[in-house]
Length: 409
Image (cartoon, rainbow, N blue to C red; front, side):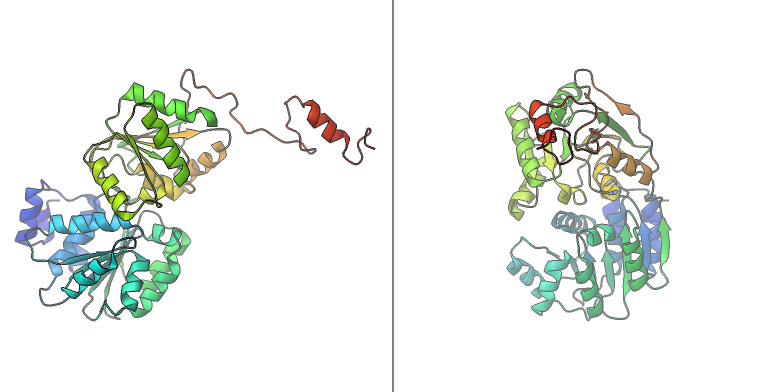
């Protein structure tokens, strides 16, 4: 369906035409009309499906020039807040709008100034939102629309209490919108608590995202050989850019350093970096000033890199939902991509759970020269030894001292 058929005004249609957007994506086609009509919305849509425009365009369409804080968008991460703020500016280029992006790690004085100067749309993370509210800087009297974006991630990051507190401070008459890529029980309970007779949109969030666009590969490799295999893949595939996910800040720093020493332009991204450093790193990666971004899961939801060819799970995500959001960084907006996961004896069982959750059955690969020596984790016997493994002299002496052993004292 063309955007012109969705009831948007001429300034927004002009902007969309300038951006080269003619046809709405499925989530936009399903969302825009009920949101323009003021209905509550409960939508499941994967990242990269165009969901930001699905709620931003109706918000911009309904803004009034004479009221402040008419729309509040709550998101789980600073990166996602900045991204949505940029989208509002892009889609609203022919409108006179004022926006405040309120996130922790950034100077609160600038955010206070933006609110004092009449921000109509506020994009915020929960903690900073409640800080501003406590200081009396946020007035919800004119609020018409609340959007909880990536609600599953909001709850996974422990923001349940903040969302509950926020709910008690909102006007009764309010359009409420909830977007989520997955719907675990806590998200369902939240939706049932805050939404009123919502329009339901389900674009198959349970399946693996972008299965038709993302080639998902699984490579078996020994834990200690993963770094060497990553270097090999970078040389073989010559990706212009690669996003690598790791489990910790330390792993991000160490792997980025290892790649840099091997001659690849690499940089880490994690929560210990200051906000300015994180913003600059993301800007440099988007501008293709370096090749490999090594990130923790904080970046899994907020990154929007055009034409990102590949994502690699150096460490597996903790949950099946995080797998969805990680690999959804590639294969966006109709572009093809590849998502590679390294598995070893230690995490092969965990990846099978991820496959089960997403109804996948992916073929295991091995790369010549990097074949794993053991494909299943070692099994310990009842005495603490490892079956099939020769015991050392020290192990034998330790075992002989156990009570009940024939040679024990």
